[in-house]
Amino acid sequence: MGFAQVTFYFLPSTISNKKNRKDFIFKGLTELKGVWASLKKLPSLKQFLMAFFLYSIGVQTIILLAGIYGKIELGIATSQLIITILLIQLVAIFGAYVFSRISEKIGNIKTLKLTIIIWGLICLPPTY
Image 1 (tube, rainbow, N blue to C red):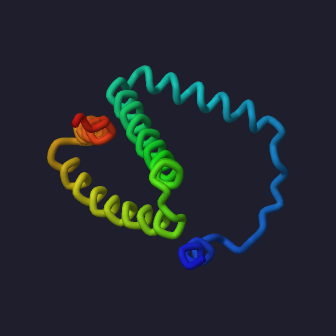
Image 2 (cartoon, helix red, strand yellow):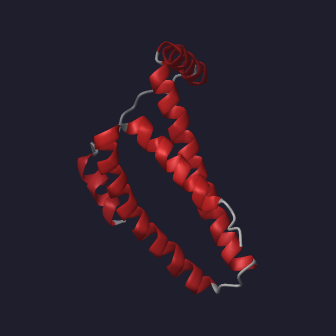
């Protein structure tokens, strides 16, 4: 609720009486087609977006499965699981800061590749 107040402060308070256009779905599809054509012309942007997508979906999957794994397999109580996930989010803030610094030095694409490799290594099962 607190962060929403910033948005409410800067949004205009007037109400627009514009009528919705009926072709908004087709207009959206036309825009997507244009974006896809632009991506074909910019292979580095396409590579960056693919790497970012893989990174993002990987992190979200691990967060989801970690909660399920902790609850079902390890039998962690819900209150302890919530605290654990919140601590992980605090560590993620620190990690985002560190990787933003790495990105400044070696570039976005190399940084995303590095994080995907690190996540892959972390997710490998231990060999005892």
